[in-house]
Length: 519
Image 1 (tube, one colour):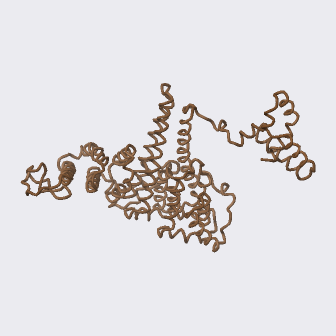
Image 2 (tube, rainbow, N blue to C red):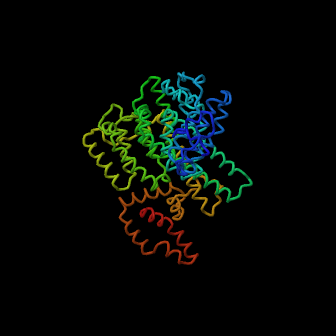
């Protein structure tokens, strides 16, 4: 006899009949197959107990007890049939009862959505875009998504298969709900890590090593969130399960109407942008798909140098390959359009400007040449392909574009701050000490101090005076030749302190003029 039911089906069902054991057929099965069948039976028992034994009042508590247990099977990288069965079970035990399903969404856009859309009212309003049949498939809460994020943050080896997990979840529930749930739970994950970091930094008992460990842990958490957002972007653009979601968000900002459904689509974009902003390329791709060209162009102009890395170049290469696919064919035609208002969010001029800005970020490579040829061929047929000046003046404060850009900029500032803290943690400086902007000396400021300028204003005034002399004073070349014969700063350092001090006082003005001209 075998320690499992021999009359069960391949998916683990069939265990509802009476009796614990049945005689085996005498066929020796492999140990792996026996283990798989046992685990399928165990998972099916969870569904049987949930549907036939557990009372309705205890079902939420019952399902919460099994969420972590079922998900942590993924750590051992089980076979695909176990993964599929696990999420099918989670979908059944977390689905809300039909009597409790709220079919009527919020009929008006919440006022706070324009500033912070990550609240339940905004989510419910955006999910109103779903039809009745889709809303019946939603979970009662987002505990599965929170547990998945926590699991993958602790086990980096699972990130290679996270896109498959997201695709599977989109087959069991509405993709809009899946993406929105991940967006909110990733935001909660970052907020919890920020609170923990601030607690360590503000603790009087925390030593330098503890601070360094916490800063490194926070930087690692942000890198994980960025990677997760990238995988969400891959599923969004490539998976057939998200086709309806792509249709709903296509040009939802660039060609937004005034209907309730248009507001719901824009709110859905705003919520998902909070997550895609964790990864620059994912955010840019998402903005291009949704028609938020002005948002993408404005952000690229404000990109932080700490965000420009080899990984960014590799991801931009993938994005350019994606832009050349048929899924983005509508953007190729949009480049030829000439609108009355070139500063409109979804105008062809803004799309052209965005792609030009991306081109300028790239080193000269295959992707650079592909995008360059696309833009050159477009510019020949486009009369409005001119430099757009005064973009910052046309960006109204408090507008939707301003809110979108600020969100992306704030998220990237968080990432850059974590990178900067990680760099400082490796130095001899105290990592807990805050460094103000006035203390961060640039190379130009250091050079100014070494030459002897009081401030930037004095340096600019001296350069202007030198230029004026060059235009009308024939003695300037003689002055420069005289300074060269005297020697540079290294020769001056070789003199005695008394001689150096006297000569510096006499020739301070001449040295300032010489270095101003050479700069």
